[in-house]
Structures are given as C-alpha cells and as structure tokens.
Image (cartoon, rainbow, N blue to C red; front, side):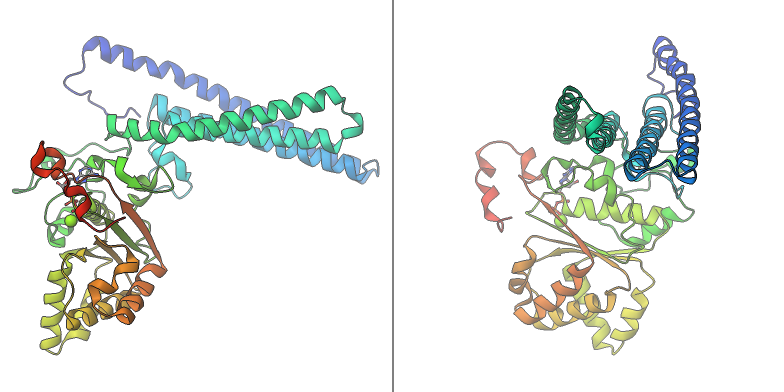
Length: 414
Ligand code: ADP
Ligand code: MG
C-alpha cells in the first residue's frame, strides 16, 4: 500500500512519476523471499545430513559441532535476509503497516537507512564470527593462510560495524531534524479531524489511534498541545539514540513504570511530558496533567475535606499522572507529605511522569526533609526511566544579544 493514497499538493507530476518508480523495487524483495526459500531448503538438507551421520555412527564431536555451526550460519543469513526484505521494503518502497502487530520487530517502528545499515553490519559480524569459529573448530584442516585472512576480514567487519554504529547517532539526529514527521508512520487523517481545537498551540498531525482520544486529550488538562514530532533531540543526554522513539511507544504505561524528566529551564521537559501524555491518550489511556503546585492544592483540599483516600483511589482511573515543575518552588511540609502519599499510592499501580529542575539527589531541598525526599525518590525511581535534558533554554535562545547572556548558568547544574 502506498504511504499516502493522494500525493501532497506541492508534488509535481514528474516528481510523482519518479517517486512511483520505487515500485520497480518491489519484485526485488520478492526475489529475496525466493532466496529465503533456498536457505530453508539448505537448512533442512544440512539437518538431514547431520541426523543421518549421527544415526549411522559416522559423526564425531567435531563433525557435529561443525554441522551445527553450519545450521546456525544458515539461520543467521536467513535472518539477515528478513531484515533486508522487511526493513528495505518499509524504507524504500512502502509502509507495511505492521504498527501494533505483536510480532513487529522493535527496530522496525523507527527504521531508516541508518538503522538498517547498522543492523546489517552487526548481522554480518555475527555471520563472520560463526565462519571464523568453524575454521578454528576445524583448525587442523584449515590452511594457515585462510585462518589469517578470516581473522583479518572479521576484524574489518567489526571495525566497520563500530564506525557505522558511531556515525548513525549524529546521522539519525540530523535526519530526525530534517524529516521530523518521518519517524512514525501515520494513516490518513479524516477531514473532520483536521479541524484544530481553539487555543491549541501546535497542530496535531497524529490521527486518533482510538476513538475518544481527542476527548481524553481535552480532559487531561495539558497547558498546550505538544507533539513528539516537533521535539528536537539534540540536547538530550541519553545513552541510546532512539530513546524518544522508544518512549513514544508509551509501553512503560502498561508496566506501570514512571518517567522522570530532569533539566534546566526551557530544555523541553514540559514539551516532552505533554507530548508523551498526548501519545498515551491516543493509545487509549486516561491522563491527568497538573503542575506540582496544582497537585499540592488539589491534594491539600482533598485532605482538608477528609477525602484524601477517595481522591487517591479516584486517580487510579488515570493510567498516567503528570506532575510538572517539581523543584521550582519548595514544598510546604504538608504538601511534601501529600506528594509522598501520592507517589507511594501510585507505586506499581499506575505511571507518573514528573519533570523537575533538580537532580534526584537534591530533592531534599524541595521536600525540606531528607527522609521524606529519599522515600519518595526511592518509590518513584524504582521502576522509572530518568531522562536528562540539557543545553540552552529554548525560550531564551530565540532572544538574541546581551540581554540574556549569562543566564545559562543560573539553574541547578546537570
Ligand atoms: P521546560 O519545561 O523544560 O522549562 P518547555 O518544555 O516548557 O521547557 O519548553 C519551552 C518552549 O520551548 C516550549 O514552547 C517548547 O515547545 C520549546 N522547546 C523546548 N525544548 C524543545 C525541544 N527540545 N524541541 C522543540 N521545542 C522545544
Ligand atoms: Mg516546564
């Protein structure tokens, strides 16, 4: 199925025709499917020989090991083929539309030519390791010359895979910036959905994944509509390049895990929290957003009315609670206690996304009580992913000149 049934209006007829030529590649992938068939035949042929040799007593230990390695080799090449077939077709021809399929490989949702290259390179390293192992197992029958070259070639594969993996980080970031909407495949938005709700800051390009998503987004109380596609990842301090794409699947919600977003002012914590909240709504979850100060008032009111327990139980209906801006204003002792109660009530019951401007180790400054802070952090962080954002503020970077110079260092250090 083509990515879009109707081409964008700015596409020229010539461009359209050229773009359509990608379908010429489709038969190549079916050719590779035939090659898969050859490998299946080869596998069972090898397996049959192995079984035959073992039964007839002709197989010694080395023979069995070599035969098994050969089988592993065939399987690995078949895996490589699947990767090229599915990943290549998805990248260069058309979306397969596997979203939501339980067998969808994790990498396919954010596949691009960089991811594919790295996957292929690592698969080739795997295959070459098996080949090398075969040579060493059968070392008495392998010429020294072959051993030497096998090792050198294997090292070359390893080095090139490492270089590709290293390069894919900056390249992926660049590509995400150049094509922010390419990350996630999307279906066509029905005409009535394209009408923007009043007062929204950004257009929402995502169609409703489930009915009622728009109502859930309205009810969540987000301060503005933010989407993951407009989030610039360049200031993200994360060990893996695809962290945003992974978080965007919002599968941490099903695990009742938490998310802690830390960083200085204007680094996109609220943007990210809202964007993930929107994704959660689209995935069918109820979300409730409020700042830490607002949560304090809400819980204090409930406590004063003698219905704190009820209020906490009522919040169980929300799969995700977002607590924005922890740390900007220190908690009153009573609010600190209430916040601890909220986090401990949610523990393994539902997800909490918090944003804050202080590292977790300095939350005693917010709570005014070391024991309370560490008990809260302990529960919050037990099943949590902590993502740190740094760099200069997105708010002040738009303002030029000396007026804002030197502001960068005023926040807590990250
Ligand atoms: P914080 O909560 O960290 O103080 P915000 O999320 O409120 O920052 O960001 C302030 C403004 O800058 C918002 O309009 C937001 O959309 C924009 N912004 C901040 N970081 C990013 C980013 N990484 N990518 C795109 N926009 C960003
Ligand atoms: Mg904020």
